[in-house]
Length: 257
Image 1 (spheres, rainbow, N blue to C red):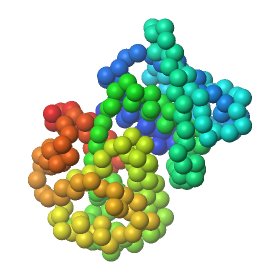
Image 2 (image 1 turned 120 degrees about the vertical axis):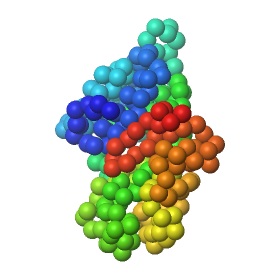
Image 3 (image 1 turned 180 degrees about the horizontal axis):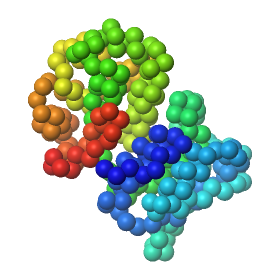
């Protein structure tokens, strides 16, 4: 998988490379999007937002953000698919501003940047649902270290230290993305299933934000491609509707279909 240049913020990298770019495998139309009334909330030094808008334009989303609104509770969005004479109107409502602020603080992306990502995601979903499940590895993906070698005590200690910051932040990002897009979350790991279940049981939600939100866990020493197929069967979806994340790298599962 060819990576684009690294942005200021790694979460934007994940969003652009593995969501927006994947959308272009299905839909090639260009979109002209105007997000109304939130320009006054943009900080002059919001380099992440500038990068996000440039990359969206690279992938066919020309986004403009206009003034004229004192609140961001309800945002008027107009977009046109180039070559289509009709404008589409999308009224974006923030369901929970507190959670949006919290997500902003955890990812380092400004609130306006979060809103732009969510609005573009809604436009994409109106065109095509890309994925239905995010499948995660465990070792060095959700936590630092190897469960079989280091043990849960060492992993738990690591998740309470500064080493946990990128891992916990990543889990919160997956948590928010899955909620926003209505995706399943699954685990696929080369580990003993009893050790995995015991480890998750011993972790609290601060250490393991995905606790109680995992829809399927498959842990054994079989080939991972077979396990991913098993997960897809349990969730009653196609393997092509899954993405697999291991060591923070995301892979499409089309080759398993």
